[in-house]
Each structure stands twice: as structure tokens, then as C-alpha cells.
Length: 116
Length: 111
Image (cartoon, rainbow over all chains, first blue to last red):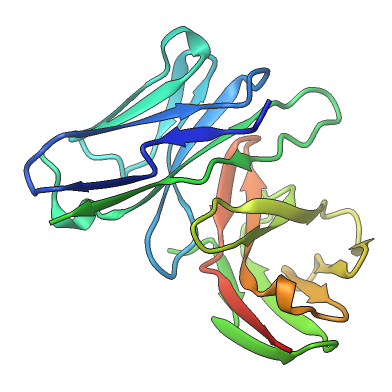
């Protein structure tokens, strides 16, 4: 297993267009997270899945954002009617917490979105 | 309101020197404090982590010092190397799944 993979790595779009990002977590990980990172800042939590259930969403996730994780495997993050303020790196992370395992986050390399 | 405050924003250290990055928090519900290292164009990678019942943890050249009463923790990088040049994020976790990250410290180790 090569870790968390994200696609595409870079996306340039015009304001008002829709974009979709995909995340493939580490195969045995049951938890999947989406974070957003802007330049010079730490990652900010967007949403979290345990298996296929979306258990929490941040207030940062406006109604233009939707995330899914069908069958508890890969996940998609869609942004509708993109705005320039959506320009950021979108990071996916996965974890698997059992017993003494601390449930550390394993991040992908991110999908960088630029909205013109 | 930022849950974890990190300083300095940037740091320049000579090769062989000690790099020190500090973080502070307020919420006593945090139960796990990891540090992440991020290289340009890459996602953050776990470097070292500590639980609040331990005052210090060392892994190779990297040490976390934890002061529970002061609600502060710091990362020390001994014998800093140019390959350590990266952005470092402290983080704190509560409620099993909620991780809060500091704003990051860009470390530049001069050869």
C-alpha cells in the first residue's frame, strides 16, 4: 500500500465552475478526513467519515461543498459554484484507531485548487 | 479562535544548532499532541507525538517537551540539518477525531 492518494494534484478553474476531488485512503483505514490548508496556515478541519457515514462537518463547509464516501472506501469532495476564496490545498487524511493505536492521521499530498 | 497557538512563524538555524518551536493551548480536553513535518508540495507527515501524562519524549534528534500545568509543548530538533528545512505544525486532538493545528513554523537550516 502506497499511502493516501489524491487526485487531481492540481486544478485550475474559473469562478462559478464545479470541481471534484478524489481521495483513496490507506486500505485498512476506516476513518477519512478532509482538511483545507491555505498559504501560511495549518490544516483546517472540513469533514470526517467513519466508514461510509459522514459524522461531522465543520462550519467552514458551506452548502456549496459536499463530500461522500460510498461503500466506505474512496471519498470525493465536490465544490459547486467555486469562488476565489475557495483557492487552497485540500488535504485528505485517513486513520485507523483500535485499542492502543493513537489513530494518527496519514495525509495525502493534497489537491491544490486555484480559482481564477 | 485558534485552539493551538504556534511560534515562531519562521526560524533560521545554522547546521548543527538546536531548533525550538513552541505551542500553547487552552483546552484541557486535548489528549494527544502530535507534531507534523511538511515539505513543499507534500502533505504533512507525523514526526513525533506525546500524551499529556508524559513530560518528555525523544526520538532520535527530535524531542517533545510537555508542560501540562502551563499548557505548553515544544519541539526541539538537535543537531539541525539542512534536510530538516520544512514547515512544522503542532497539533492537539480531542474527542478522538478532532485535530487542531497550529499555524506552522517554517524552518530554514543554513549549511
